Image 1 (cartoon, rainbow, N blue to C red):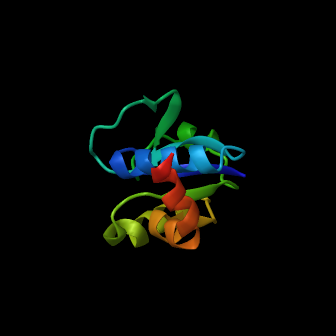
Image 2 (cartoon, rainbow, N blue to C red; image 1 turned 90 degrees about the vertical axis):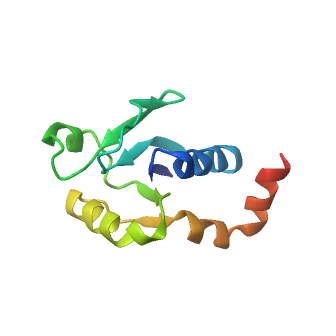
Length: 113
């Protein structure tokens, strides 16, 4: 399964570590963000893509919209983020919290590694 992580700060990086440790067969395509905060251009060699309302059209052409997007931000922003991602063409979303609840045993295993 191909996926992106929306959120390129500490929550996004934590989820990145979690997924690459426990689901290493899945392919991480990049990090996404839409706010005005400064973000790195890559995280450990993985691209970080700006998808805010004023993003250039070329960035959208390079995104795999069939990929799942894990949302790794504070919950208060999730509706706004999902709305933005739908406008771009993404259709599958899961929050970090939903994923952790779904697979709590694996999540605990991460911290034992």
